[in-house]
View 1 (tube, rainbow, N blue to C red):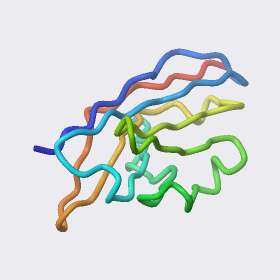
View 2: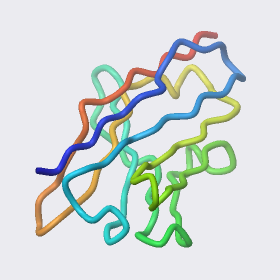
View 3: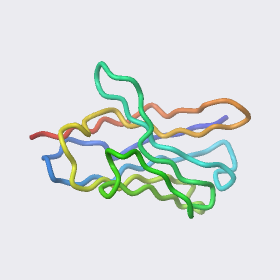
View 4: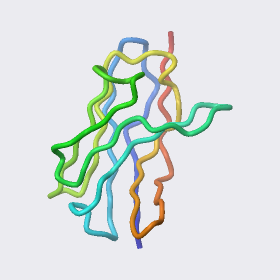
Length: 116
């Protein structure tokens, strides 16, 4: 079955950097687009970044453009999110996501906390 396992979340100071990883299994990773979402307390889950199956096409939320970079390694079946210049408003649980046969699949999430 599809499994997505995020890691890399941590407590970091404003202006710092983190790299999140999402290990994927149970499907042909290289065939599917992947996304990162985040959910802050009391807020709806929002799309942060998306990457196509090849890794050549990416899209970002306006709030993270120029600071975050999504990438993937189709040999290691792993999705990444490099986050630089972190701000307190980036504090959230970050989830990786894929859509397969009309279904959404989510990992358990990893907590990112940015202190001011």
